[in-house]
Amino acid sequence: MTLSSKTKFIFITGGVVSSLGKGLASASLASILQGRGFKVRLKKLDPYLNVDPGTMSPYQHGEVYVTDDGTEADLDLGHYERFSGVATTQYDSITSGKIYQRVINKERRGDYLGATIQVIPHVTNAIKEFIFSDLTDEDFVQCEIGGTVGDIEGQPYLEAIRQIAYELGKDRVMFIHLTLLPYIPTAGELKTKPTQHSVKKLQEYGIQPDMLLCRSQMPIDQNEKRKLALFCNVKEENVVTALDVGNIYEVPLAYEKEGIDRCVCTHFGIECQKHHSDLSKWQKIVDIVRNPKENVKIAVVGKYAGFLEAYKSLSEAIKHAAIANFAKADILWINSEKLETGSVDDVLKDVDAIIVPGGFGQRGTEGKIMAIKYAREHNIPFLGICLGMQLAVIETLRNVAGISNAGTTEFDKNCTPVVGLLTEWQNGSVIEKRGENTDLGGTMRLGAYPCVLQKGSKVAEIYGCSEISERHRHRYEINLSFEKDLNQSGMLVSGKSPDGRLPEIVERPDHPWFIAVQFHPELKSKPFAPHPLFTSLLQTAIERKKNLI
Ligand code: GLN
Image (cartoon, rainbow, N blue to C red):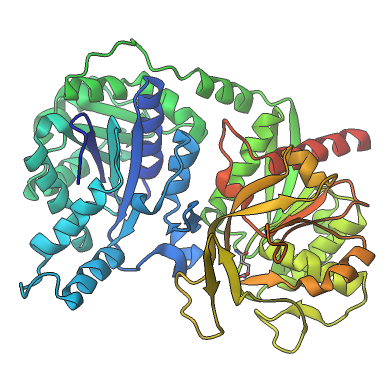
């Protein structure tokens, strides 16, 4: 391990309750520090025992985020990328499952030379190794510890970061504790007691927070800050309000106003050349979000309609595209199962665009196919993503080509398999192979793959280039032996893997905007670099809406 002597570590823990938005807080701090010219890296450590979130239900843990190198990661990595613009990798997301797997693998290989394997030092050392891995010349490495202080499974992480502070010294380590000051209406007061208890718990583990970032629905007055400072042993100026804000893009501006970056610089004794962080790009975004020129209604037809964390990157990508079009997107989350029993027209007649996102399993797929048919027949701009692309192909082959039994082997073994299990593909110089009985975890086609765009196609025009790289997460693939049937039914395979064997994009030249992709474009969209597919979809939706009025 060669650690640059200038690299400083900021550890972010959470107290009182979960879901306080540590990921967003961490991502916002990173963007503020970047606005001062610092190089920042963000990492997430999750204490749960799953090896990665890949096999976790989106209902439990929200979307599975995928990095370029094919890591299935916590959705907070999406916040990190979107706010900092720094692409995340396998070195930025870890779980206890993976840590223990590494330790146990080493033990099986005999690497510990007969030692008794213990949480301290073996597990804590593996955690430290992860924190220090793959660093170059970062000014700051921000590490977010998942869960809430006091959780049994989080203890090895707290011990590991305590040790890092001991080893590197306090001038290279800062502890930020994100906490909640609940407002009790009957008392008319913000309560500091839960925070005091949470800090006491941290102190039991040998960690003294340097800053309290206090989530609150109203400004925290100086008396309360003084009380928290005194009881929690934190400098008064380092008790910082994290006020609830209207939209997430306001968070960096709100934190900067509270002086969070000044606290960080002062803690590390860094002379700030710039008086302020340059957050003008955030200000521009917030201005558009507050004063949109258009409204556009986008239907997302999916399985997890009631649980929006499952579509985090997608809803963000739609918002980014709306901002790029100076518009506000009203996203209509439609449970596809409902379409199967009701009138599709009633639900979809007023929408400006339809998106069918990725998904796994059969439930609700017939409803998604009905939505795709509706988009195709009514010239409504349509984007299909992953399963959405597979179903778009099935829809065309069933309803236009007349292959009534067209389906996917993912949930119908007796169908005409126009979508089938991907058993062999090229990943760089490696041939990846899978079978029916391989494990579910970590065995998909994952991460960034190149795709060649057909000259003169709509996607080539939208991307403005001939080869792209996008991130994948799937096991099944469209069977190219049906390409001729697709062409005869008005569907063009306009993007393929460089060897021409895997279809990546289909489009309908007879439609104002009908594109479906095997990859997940939403994962790479950022507020400052909205994804071209989403921007173009919304632009067409807005234009179409105006012509209709
Ligand atoms: N279930 C499909 C597959 O595995 C699609 C996956 C997805 O939409 N991410 O191929």
